[in-house]
Amino acid sequence: MTTTATRPGAGPNGPQRSRAAITAKTLRTDRWWLAPLITVIGLGAWVTYATVRVFMHNYYFVEEYHYLTPFYSPCVTDRCVEGSSLFGTPLPSFWLLPEAAFTLPFLLLFRLTCYYYRKAYYRAFWLSPPACAVPDGHKNYSGETRFPLIFQNAHRYAFYAAMIISLINTWDAIIAFRSGDGGFGFGLGNVILVGNVVMLWAYTLSCHSCRHITGGRLKHFSKHPVRYRVWTFVSKLNVRHMQLAWITLGTLALTDFYIMALELGWFSDLRFVG
Image (tube, rainbow, N blue to C red):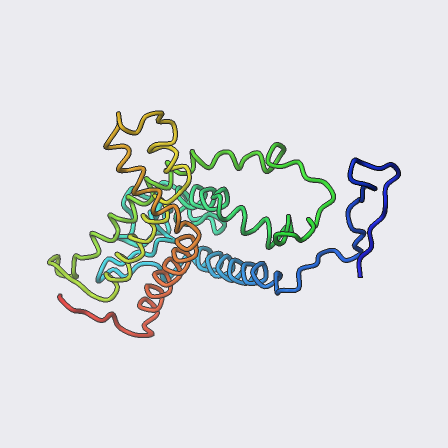
């Protein structure tokens, strides 16, 4: 039962009352903690898998079909197997250095600073706040104005890098249609690679920064019909940004796991042509 306290003095309609004195942290009776818990489990599992795979330094390229996992693209260390590198191998094979050292940091920055992922890990890992109408887990909050969260403002620049990396992944998917004898080849691995690239493009283009770039500063859409159409398309994708953020984590893990399984000989690629 809650109580109210009467404040000294009276207004035109009688005594004024203060807020209810509630001892409970929240009056929510639903399972508000479930969404943050699922986020912790989901993101934690994906980060663990991706970290292990990146530092395995192996099982990332199927030479026969030119399948290259996105976790190792582009491969730039001198440990890269023949045929897996598009831009040479200028970096040494130090074990703490991932094969995709030129792209992984930018992809990590793009995901970390993504508006949806901020909400996800702020709520799930930092409890800031864990849910609506639930108190913040911290006494003080300075927003994203101080170190290290001030670097969240780099998201728009990470978006440009993500666009370039998406182009590289697209090229990886295209050249994977080349079979072992140099002709055209098509298998289940190609379906997975192309599906992953399509989802990555959808997630990248649904980014809030992309929406702002395409039409965020226009004052008159009627004077810019082409940009308006692009902005409308991006806005439709933007509505699904959260779903695409999770879907792409799944397609990335699936693509990598499939290529690793082929390299380990767990099963053979289902070939349709070539």
